[in-house]
Length: 449
Image (cartoon, rainbow, N blue to C red; front, side):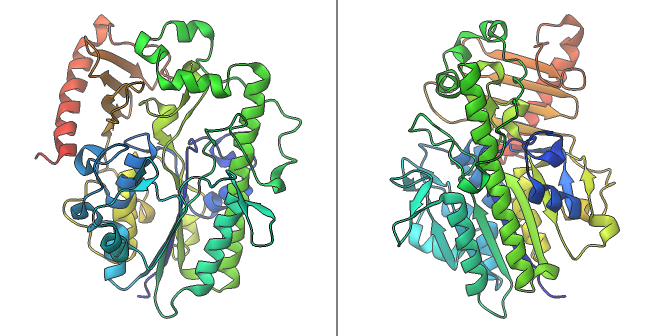
């Protein structure tokens, strides 16, 4: 059987519901929606660690953060892990591999992989990493002196890769858009391509859940004083500012959507559409004012739940078109999925699960019903946390607080995680069970069997 081409499209900070097909009635995402209508959309997709560096290391390796041990301000991602990454294994098996965009395995502006030149040479034939933004932010100066938005530049580079690919070899291209990540160093925060200027001018974005001052006032002090609150003042501390920022965010997502449409058009024009699998995901979600906070880092649904769509044109239309898959899937699952789609064996140390069985039979009964989530970045204004997410419950512990601060949410009855049930006497046994199960999952995540 002919090996498929694979394109993995990744956005930055795009929450699970920032697509029209995911139930957002305002946002304009026709190409994401079309990809979902022609493929499979995973309605319960999660990142195990809601921060760029750690999540992207997990996407490459299929390992938990506490296993690969990489996030901001840590030592480089070790070769023992990059050697089992999907680009390395695909390239060694004969794939032409490329990376375009924000690599994200970085800290303080430095790319942090062990034995950098050798490692990147094993992973990619083409490595075009333009981390974050240049001196003009999201606007990139062109040779003729004009300015072009970074999202459009990314699409240009993808088109160039497709035209310059090595003939006679299957390819795997990883594309990482910076958008819709805010440009943190300037007041405007959100910048978008001029092609979407006209969108959202006459709409009003609804206020987020749990955003009242009373809700924030009831948060523990360590969350009230966190970096998430500081950044809330950058973006959401006023009615007009909220509307301005959210419309900017939405336009950035729509800008990526337009780029996806252009990429798919190019794939078709090159005659590659029948054998090119497209995977679309985000590295993590984000608060848009919920809880009086901004950014990611915490283990609530807003931060850990992400969009995921897989389009495999080789599948039967009745299997593929518009299918919704409800099983719980993770960022850890991307690497083993890509490997199996390419016909390669998945390393035994991989902690994620290939999603290929769900692509061929979405009624699979034997699937995970819980997972460990964690945020271990050492930052004075971001509290570390870890926990477990089941099909019904979310248990979180802020383990460096004295005493340990715990939260328990019934996701069946409280989808917005509004009411902390940790002191509910009726749930004592359930809480004990969740603590015990979390301890087991944490050991497994560490690689302890």
